[in-house]
Image (cartoon, rainbow, N blue to C red; front, side, top):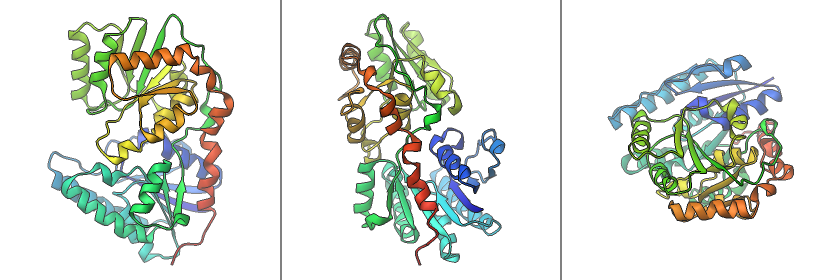
Length: 372
């Protein structure tokens, strides 16, 4: 039985993409060990699936230099742990853990190193941090056997930026598992339109503008903001709703990934926004977009390439240029009047399912020929 070590620093609990990867590998008789830098990780999901999780928490503080040092310490701890594990493949889930993966690859050349870049993470950084991790990423890419990107525009940008042979690049979108799909089309809303924003509650994601916009819409159009987040922001947004007596907007607690599809079946439209503050956001193709589609919801978001290609070209959603009551209302009216929900067919759901593309992942792990 082949074995894979996964190196990840993000919050494991909400990483549906990681769950999908582990699901595919274990269903195809791979052992999986996760080396995690998530300081708050609770072994509630993976421990019941015979996945070994080694928690090596990264310390994030208000002092950036301490956080940076902690990230380097994490890589050293990962490297030391990997000397004790029998494995065939290394899967680095983002940039910060890539250094340990590349170091292990250098020391054991017969292993296959796979880098799931997932996002253009270095493009999110600024200043000294961007220079440091940009340099590290550039060096480590030399030792990668395969590099995965989650969106076609990101893949093209990344491949050209680092002059990577196209044969090394693999496109693996953020599609959800089809088995969690309801496989049904919802009614076209008439008397009530229920909209959901499913995601991490943080700044710079358009929440304040959304709350204001929905407060100006008819009361039969409601918005539920559902997710974990920073308590400072959650309290701030709740105070706005309370102080202005906004009755059609609520902020609700996070749900587990296993509950997503059933929970979404209560809604008609899914909405999400990332501000165009960097190339990573501009080229986004969010997991939540595909979760919405998977559950039969139409989608509203910004007019970014990866989003436009999915929701506008398939007539299952609407792209706005800015978050205003007028644009949101136009989007909702277009979706309801033109019955966009009817376009979310079982065939379309299948196309945007993890199972539709998982052969791409397996083709990487079934190839045991590492680069020299």
